[in-house]
Image (tube, rainbow, N blue to C red; front, side):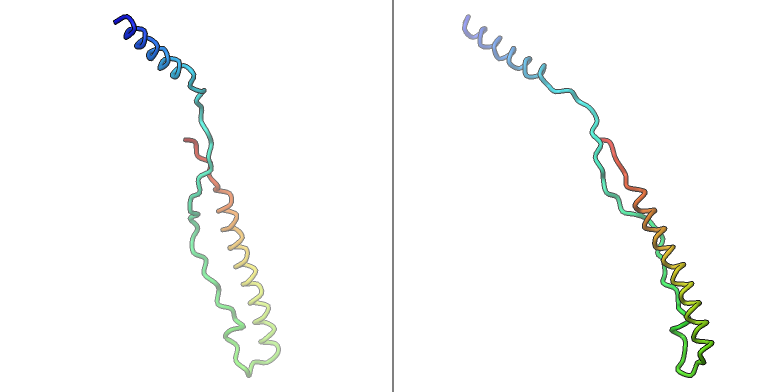
Length: 94
């Protein structure tokens, strides 16, 4: 009977020692990917696409210039959407 109590005390002490040696707990920051929510950016209709084969040189140049300006605006919208997605890279704490 005496040995049974000693075994019980040894098991109890081992369990308590195991609980006492738990490491320090804290928060860990883990980046969690989330889908970027940006509006759908539609490609503009370029004036060059509407030209026919009988357009004179001045009409062609004006259409090319207008198309270039539209393309630049479209690129700026795409770059703004990309920067908005890159800026919202979240860091979540668990």
